[in-house]
Length: 369
Image 1 (cartoon, helix red, strand yellow):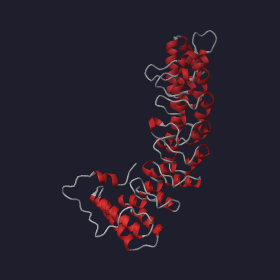
Image 2 (cartoon, rainbow, N blue to C red; image 1 turned 180 degrees about the vertical axis):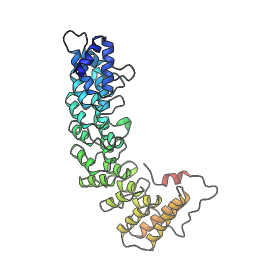
Image 3 (spheres, rainbow, N blue to C red; image 1 turned 180 degrees about the horizontal axis):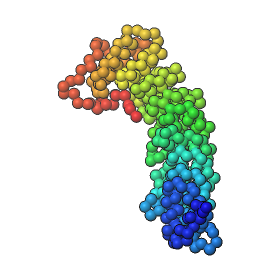
Image 4 (cartoon, helix red, strand yellow; image 1 turned 30 degrees about the horizontal axis):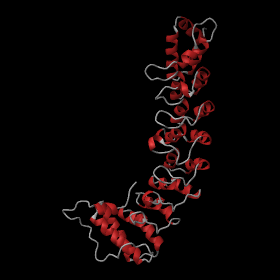
């Protein structure tokens, strides 16, 4: 019985190099490692006027991909192994706008291909949008069913993983993406290679980023690693202030016992202000309990927070009155926080008919990221 190889050979006899190039690209694009092997074997037989290397270096007219790059995208590890000896993956071989093969493998969270390509590649190489292989491996976790962690573990020892490293288009860095997974395992994989108190381009620390993303498991891992909860970034925001305003209260719960509840932002607001102004009753209640035994004034503030949330009072006459009452409460608790005289009278949450948003009110509303 004739072998599959024998059945292919007569067809290849009539091929030009151009036809052979296209056949290899098609086989690689389809993830057909058996056909890739047959074609490469036949091209190397004595007497054939076909070049396996030329075919491997040829780029598809439509996609711009080589056979190797097509195999990476197809996740065909066998074809990658077959094509690598005939391929050029150096920086000089890559046309503008094309991602390096290592970054391609990381983009799909394929740890096996990352491991195969890493010894032959520069992990610091940037693709056409300024991203490294490590960034794409971290990105893969949220875009390819959680894959990417094993690829990250391979890339971390040879990459710049710090929170303040250059990021994708000025956006998230690999460590930020890892924190966003809300997984202790992800954060702990990065910890040997990062400074947990580094600041990014927005003057945020990893802990502040975890609070912003409501990533309570990541936040706990950062605290255990020595992250400083008292750092204040732009506008003097702290991680607790950020957490207090979020919908989920778990990050605030973890931060309250290790944070300075006296801290104010550049507008004079505390974490309690942020929780109340955002209508976050659970976080506000936890903050109030941390300040001392419950009393009627604390209950009044929680009731106001519920009303603020129910009526969606994002502005401003009502919120300014809420700030007055919050400051008065803090002053009455002898916490030495108050910056304004104690408010008197009932809180008026009504909005005047002619009310436009005044600049003073805008300045005094809690900041958001």
